Image (cartoon, rainbow, N blue to C red; front, side):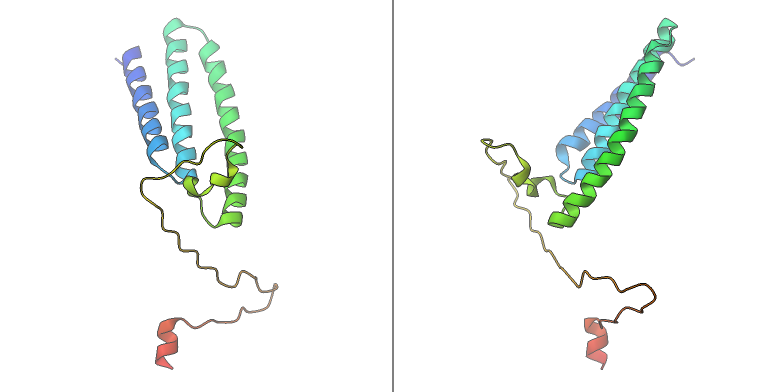
Amino acid sequence: MITLWHYLAVAAALFGIGLVGFLTRRNMITMFLCAEMMFQGVAINFVAFARYHGNLQGQVFVLFIIAVAACEAGIALALFLMLYRRGKSLDASTWQSLRETGVPPAVDTEPLEIEVKVEDEHLAPAGVRPKHIPTEEEAARV
């Protein structure tokens, strides 16, 4: 039989994995997914205690958590797209310009090497075949 402690152990494992992932990763999408993992660990705790006490209060609260997580996912996706278009990177350490005024910048112990390779960013109009740009191998064969 599955007891309350089994649910709490799974929830603690989810929350712990999410916390470690959030603190050790730099990619914003990975950090977002780890935060969602922590939300799910908390949600399992609420459902487990609601089942243990025989009421629905914890389950109703979980519905609110899921609704907030869905809204957060939409906003985060829009934010990630705009940040990537602006800076060509989703590394959290490269966004020092977004910090509050008066707060010193965080300095990484390992500097991040970023190579931004910008090619022609213009799309061809609909119905027009894009111009073929030969690769180095194709140029060497000619």
